[in-house]
Length: 195
Image (cartoon, rainbow, N blue to C red; front, side, top):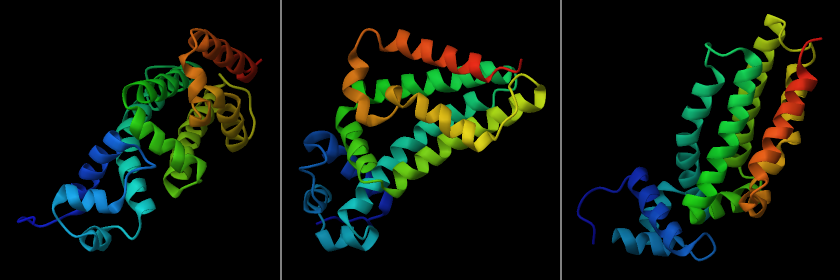
């Protein structure tokens, strides 16, 4: 049995390791408890369900991405249109890298996204907020055409879903994906520019 106190962060780390080893379908709370040398009840004291535990893992995983995306989105050295291009291309590249380099956790993210979890909904909300902020800045500077920032942000996110939505992950291995994404981003920026 475990000697030191058990905390949520330790449980999340163990769960992440097991998810990488077994994938989301075969990972159980009992597996996590065994890994930690505790009873499954000890894990449940910190996380009410298997879903809550998976969400905690993915929340931590996405938090690492959020800092990078926020830095790009709020880079005041770039004009708004170029910030928008940089945010989208960084978002795509980050998702592609996660799918390629950490396929088991990405599979877990896909499961949660399909279940419309609070974590995936929060991630979409974060992305929409970053897009909205850039659009507001672009309208204020006269670089982007006027419009409803919330509506435009959602339209941009929807128009680019092929390059960031986990349901399209199988398509990201295509050699044309990078060129296709660049073409879509250029088309969006051209449509948003003030005339």
